[in-house]
Length: 164
Image (cartoon, rainbow, N blue to C red; front, side, top):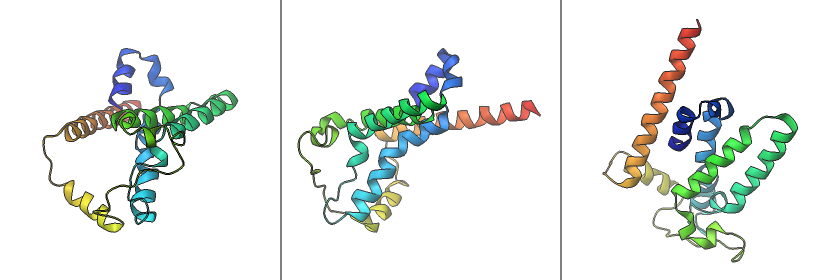
């Protein structure tokens, strides 16, 4: 999000093309797909929160479908989602896990995760950890993301007030 938000200030034309709501959705889409599937539904067999949505195939499929929709309707919403999804893979450093990243090139199965917390236990543990911040790169990037989103919301509200 931060990359595209910064580009929107540097290249103002991009702000007309990129809808940050779809970019935000796309940046969360791999986790929206994979966490419930791998940690809740298939918790006993996979116990892995990085499966289908964290593959290059998933992002490329979104991009191809996005190009098709853009050609037909001149609406870039799915392309924007695909960009967000791809940058999510980069932030998660998925290239370090080639079996998942390049799925299905190395086989049809996904690596089995650590079943310490599965099902609802996983979500409860994540909820608990979210209230114990530590100064890690992940926490810092999440904090910066929240600041950027807050700035975006405030500027959006100001624009709406000015239009009245």
